[in-house]
Image 1 (cartoon, rainbow, N blue to C red):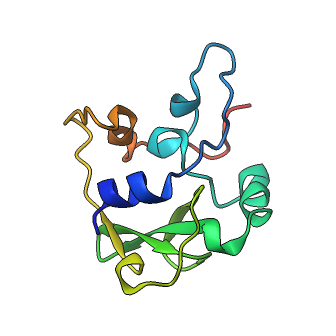
Image 2 (cartoon, rainbow, N blue to C red; image 1 turned 30 degrees about the horizontal axis):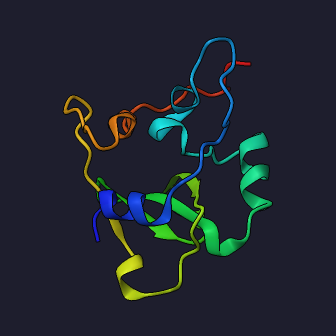
Length: 123
C-alpha cells in the first residue's frame, strides 16, 4: 500500500476542521491540515481518539513512513483517521513519497507534506 491508497482508504481527519482568520483547514497544519503535532493541545486531541484510529509519521534512515498506532521514537507527528486500522500486514509501514513541487490533482493539499510548523506554534 502506498500513501495515496492509505489516504483514500483510511481518510485522515483535519486537525482544525474550521477555517480561522481566513486560513482554510488544509492550510492550518502540516500534511494538508491532517498532521497533529507531538506536543500541547494537538497531542491531547490525539490522545482522546481510539488507538485504532491513530497513526504516527516516523522517519527511518531519511525516509518517512506512516505506521499504525501511537509511537514516540523518530516521530514527526500523528494522524487520526475516520477508518480504524486493523493490524493487517499491509498497514504496517506506509511509505510517504511526496514531492512538494509536484501537484497532485487527486489530493492537491497532500503536496504540503514537507512543510513543518515552527515551535512554538503561532497563536
